[in-house]
Amino acid sequence: MIKRFAAVVVACVVLSALWFAQPGESSNGVQLSRQADGSMVLADLSSDAPVLDVYEDFDCPVCKDMHAKVDATIQRLAREGKVKVVFHPVTIFQDEPMRSNSVRAAAAARCVPEANWLAFRDELYAIQPAPHGVASGFTVEELVKAARKAGAAVDECVTSQSYAKAHLEQTATIRLEGTPTLVLDGRMLGNEAFDAAALERAITGGIGVAV
Image (cartoon, rainbow, N blue to C red; front, side, top):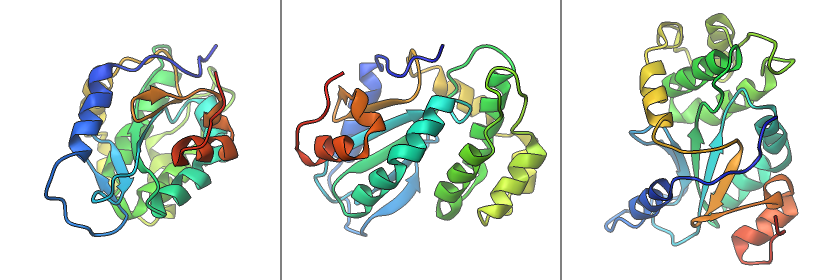
């Protein structure tokens, strides 16, 4: 059974907060940028908006459900400058075929340029292997096709899986009991993660839904 929420290593949350707090950032509006650890930041870095860390495994069906329910809201709030979003692709599964499915997808995601990454993420959830726990999927051929559909020709990078090792090394530094896990300014969210209106209230200062 997939656990929806879990404790995140405090250091990870603190590091996100420190990174955003760096002085001297110029205001370039809301942009999507890739960090050294493979995370993707959708934010106006010059703003003082709250930080929402999104930990997701592309082979996780609960993540797919969350994506369908709240991703549009998360992206809208980010583009309105009301939240800084950090997407953390992780591999939570230890059993096969889920683990290999997840690693292939996450490694491929690191190949895709920022301009195409969100579209590629949509494609990944659209082709997520099913039934979960049984189906092998996210083949390199499927991932190449998904990247091209998202507008990125990164065939060699995807097929070589050159980022697989780095992805697993980074995942090992993040302690999660399950995905998805959403952390807003260091506070782990509960049922808000699956309710667009409740999540927006939590982000913008309203009262969220208790776990």
